[in-house]
Image 1 (cartoon, rainbow, N blue to C red):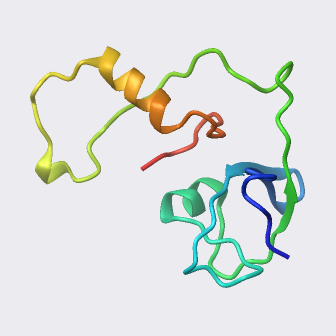
Image 2 (image 1 turned 90 degrees about the vertical axis):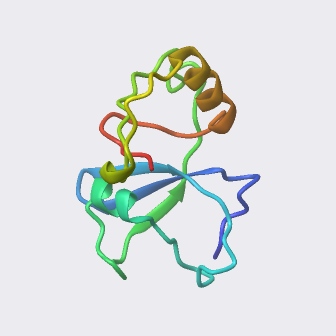
Length: 113
């Protein structure tokens, strides 16, 4: 059964004993009903194989335990050929990040592309 992304915006994905990862989800008409689609960086981070069976349950954040007050990001160019030496305004980048990912689940070591 598919999850309602408004009622259940986050999932706990268990890939094996003692291994679980929290993902923020969104509906995609290209995904087969009853399945979860992951991007390549997500599959690498969670060590997921294509068509791997996983256990998925709703995940609810507790504001007392799970919300962060800061995050440290490492930024790099995905395509090194098109990199730039121009300086970037990190204050503007932080504001944009906060606006783009206001309710996103993040964890240590997670890649975002």
